[in-house]
Length: 74
Image 1 (cartoon, rainbow, N blue to C red):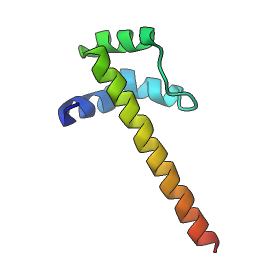
Image 2: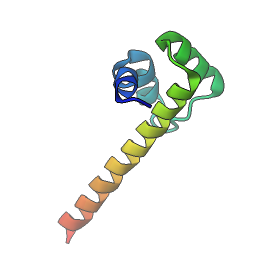
Image 3: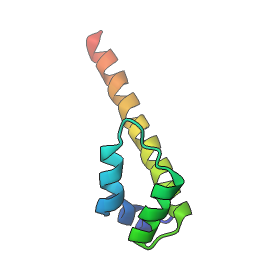
Image 4: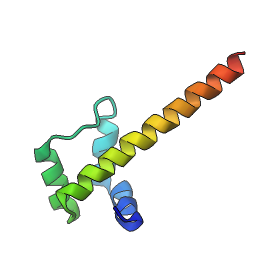
């Protein structure tokens, strides 16, 4: 996925709002992905990859925060 595509999805209220509203389970169904693709003018595969990358980045951020908290607790 290109950086431009990723930035577009990240700044797009449709995808960003969906992600935030479903933060506890950020795995949209195929129907939701199709709808987001239609609204954004992108391919379903691009929407899927954006969510995959977003989940990975969120996990990395949480892991780093947990490690920092552990270091501070010592």
